[in-house]
Image (cartoon, rainbow, N blue to C red; front, side, top):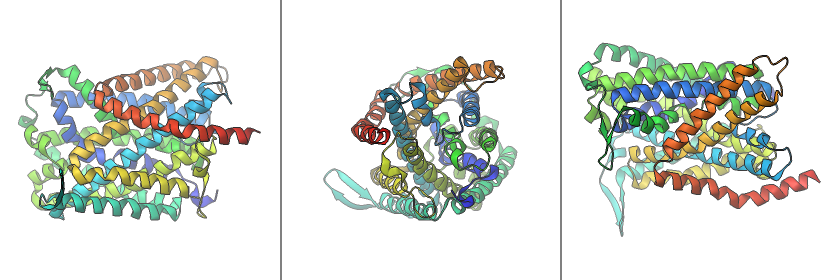
Amino acid sequence: MSNGNKLGLAILTSLVVGNMVGSGIFMLPRSLSEVASPAGVILAWVLTGLGVLVTALVFGNLAIRKPELTGGPQIYAKQLFKEGSNLSLLSGFMSSWGYWIGNLAGNVAIITTFAGYLSTFFPILTSEAVLFTAGSFTLRVGNAFTFAVCTLLLWGTHFIILRGLENAGKLNFLATAAKVVGFLLFIIIALFAFEASNILPFAEAKIDAAGNSVGLLGQVNNAAVTTLWAFLGVESAVVFAGRAKKKIDVKRATILGLFLALAIYIGISTLVMGLLSQEALVSSQKPLIDAIEVVLGPIGGKVLAGIGLISLFGSTIGWVMLSAEIPYQAAKQGIFLNPFKKENKHGMPVFSLVLTNLLGQLFIFSTVSNSISQAFDFVIYIATLAYLVPYLIASLFQVKLTFTGETYVHNKGRKLDMVIGVLASIYSIWVIIAGTADIKTFLFGVILLASGILFYPKVRRSQSLTNK
């Protein structure tokens, strides 16, 4: 691999921050206000932050102890079982498949949010005027234009990445730097305009869709999947570990990126609740812009929308890169379909990139019939649950290493790593249980994951030929 495709600490950190602080920062204040009171939202952020911290420590530790295993947390699945066994191959493939599908859904959430914030400048994107009707289907002008914008963003990003990782990484770095500065300014301004009355009552019961009253702990439970969505991408540096200049930078970028993202999320989500009433927040399609307009008027909203568009453009680059890298690295490890190993002259996974974005295009069709907020809520649940399986697997793999003592010299750090691995495993299991309480989401997620079984025989045959 050429030096131009090697990533340093700054770009690795920007990938972590850029991929975490993407669509979530713009849409989650509304999503969380639907299921939790202000107290529930803040408590959910704190618990999720602690859970993701121990998970990030697992990723950083494994990147150093198992540097040969590159491509993301799903790669560790095959290491849980006897090397070369069918169970090892099956678990590695299915984990990679689920992780890849989760990224596809994540891409759509970011791209559709981009279209939502672009509507600040082009209101036609939210037009309810009917374009045409066919039977029970009605296509509205706003949905049609949103679909076109999302498609252009997806494929524009595609061609940028095809030209090489270094240039795409630099664009992501610049966009991430712009978003961090912009969000810090938002926090400073919001501090002076914060209205405590908007977050009162601070802790109250919420009524769910079935009409049941949900207490504080129940609200935290319901918000668990939603808040975790904000931190998906914390493993970005691990996915690109094979392209890192120094392996230690993978752990440093992961931890540094997590703390930067956590500070931004807690600060902004709390302050937005103090700028908008609960009713206004729940009904908002672009809560950050609506919040800043309360303080600075329409001009402030447009400035923030511009920062948001830069931020989301950078996140799109990072997530499309990540999505294509996952099956590419898995194929190199022998646990995915062989065509995904194909590269172009710039060392980019061209087959993986094309197929990933074609499938992403199918997800974008959700914007034709749904509002941006509905599409966002749907895909974040599917994406988050798909991610949790590899997260759990990585945590269990660390527990296995500490149990066997492999890679540990004189048992240094072994007990601490075991505690971290156990806590990370408990956290992943908790969120999986909370997220699968909704049977519709659970069944759809299972169908997406199970669909990988159709392709497993090809992986097994190619692996058998390789071993001969």
